[in-house]
Image 1: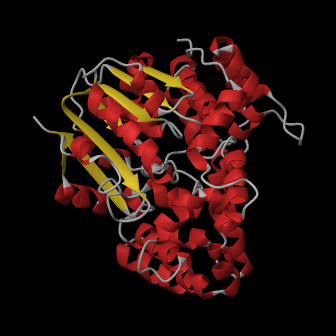
Image 2: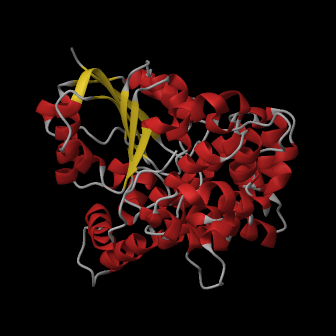
Length: 415
């Protein structure tokens, strides 16, 4: 298996990120924040995706032969969708680091000898043997751009690929953000890993209330959460910050506490690998602990056999759809990208979604706030073509184990 070639055009990447993020004049407070975020977002942000793939797959109701367009992010869900036997998955991402990350993952899945080696690479992700496996099995089939990305040396002198033997999930902006959270907790004498000792949901809540909840009353934590730039590590651009707070909320500290409480208390840890990553920075203990579907031994051979059905491009969803024929896509996955968009961008996107949607097409997305952001912003004539499954959306959101979003939304094309 060879990864498809996608050139890393730095100029076009910078322009796309500029268009996606920036709304204000550069030499203004808001403009400088947008510029800083756009620069940071060219780096690796997500080493794993923070949208629950089981919820996605239930909402999408993928049937064999479906054609899917999705935003890639860390790629976990892209691979997990293969379990449902779609004909094609076209993934896109504006971040060139995410493109390189996904192309490496696709190559590793096809090239590594078996499940044990793949799990060591992406499940444990902390073994020096991973570098030898990269050199022997993965490197020879990578396209030059992806190989160049992973072999570039950082200021430390280490090649980027070495993060796969230095605890992969401690890297990327999100991994570093979680690490800062652990550091702050330890400064106050709290070890977040203690939560994972709980054996019942009652224990989970008790330990949360005793350890993590009081941190949100600390002056340092309250100051940090009021600073928009401090949340760039969560992948939250300046314009999404206000959507996350929403009307009627006291402040960002309250919102983050509520989201963390849901992650810590609303789902048993035996079923929630997101909690293991947030509080333990690992995927369980390797002995029956929860894993993303693509990392499950039971799904490995199925996903490996279908990995050629995935492509990855460094463009936007709107750009990809604009060159596709009408009625050619069955399922659309937008993650939370619309929180970033202006009204003009939203309308351009939904024009292309509606044009390319096949009969019975489904669109899913998440929002930082609770409400569906489309009404009043997207042309009513476009929205009338779609059935917003509000009750189903709320039920699906309640089952999303990642717990970091305010809303999950499902739209189905009307007959």
